Amino acid sequence: MITKTERSVVFIKRILCLVITLFDQSVLACEIPVTSQKAPITIFTELWPPYQELDQNDRLSGIATQKITPILDSNNISYTINVMPWARALQLAKQTKNSLIYSISRTTERESQYHWIYAIDQVRTYLVSLAGRKDMLINKLEDILNYTLILKRDDATNNFFLNLGFVPNKNIIFVNDSEHALRLIAKGRADFYPMVHASFQKALETYPEFIEQFELAFELKPFQVELYLATDRLSDEAFVSDMKKVFHCTSK
Image (cartoon, rainbow, N blue to C red; front, side):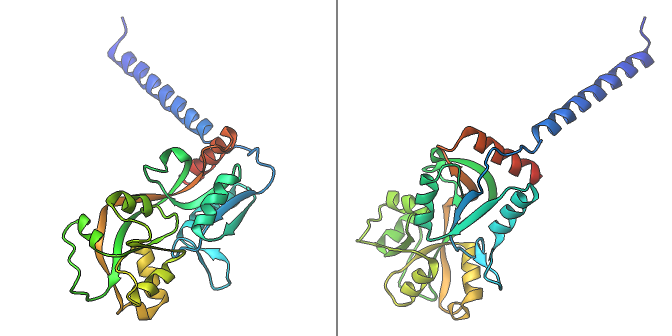
């Protein structure tokens, strides 16, 4: 007959075996692969402070860049980062096999178009307007249809506003960057421009004259998304697997 003490010993041994097995599986799952990518990985992005911006030496930096590049560097993965307007970056990322793009919003419309490699940040989006305007009444989301909106070309918010009922060339003005958008609002050419909170705060730091000019008028609560590093859905399976392992294991 097995005594109570012997049962306890057997139980403890089983638990130890289970822990060792799970640890071994975790180590194997996080073995950093020797990537099959021989040429430097091409990465596309835009200047979008504070996530992608130039430092004092005109080198690419920012919140997102500082999260992504150290992981690639620590794994001896060579890469080149190409900075351009966002619409162009999206286009080239789709045309360039096994390339990466950041910081791209993970939306319902984009879900099936990309492999989502690495989560960078979760963001909240607001409508920015001239400060102190008393003629604009926004009690619910649909009320903004009464005003003119500025959107960045191919921005993640575009489908959101088009589905809401906005019409290009009627109550939408398209621009390439946030600085242009804010200056158009300052001139009275439009009423609102959607901005991520961190981006708006950075704009106020960069252009002190904006502090008295603009305010966050309305939070777009239905549009809260995560920013990602991603690759096109047509990228090689081996490349996708390698990149996911590299970022999953190194960022732990």
